[in-house]
Amino acid sequence: MVRLAFFAAVAALTVGPILSAHAQQQGPACLKRADLLQHLSRQYQEAPAAVGLADNGALLEVFASKAGETWTVTVTMPNGISCLIATGQQWQDLPRVAKLDNPT
Image 1 (spheres, one colour):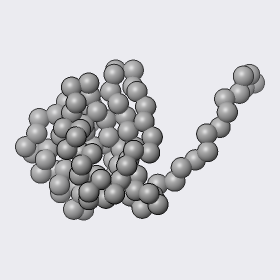
Image 2 (cartoon, one colour):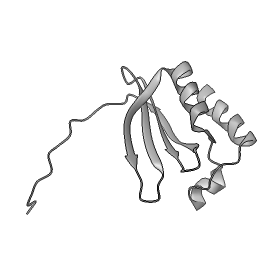
Image 3 (tube, helix red, strand yellow):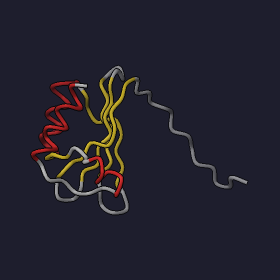
């Protein structure tokens, strides 16, 4: 709850990119990526756990605490602004499965 209050306060002071019509209605919490990383590290001991580059150039990141107690999903736009997408508890890593050559 404290985490959401922090991001809501930051969102009220920060103008971020609009991710979707739904996000626009709820007002995504957005701030500079460096500020977000610092907050997640200090407050929740979260570090990057997974990353992917979206087709639109955005960086999708999952941050998780060492034992997976908490996790955060963010999207960072090319302009360096990160938006909070989701937070939760009990993050679990899954083994990567080899892609089949012929999945028929």
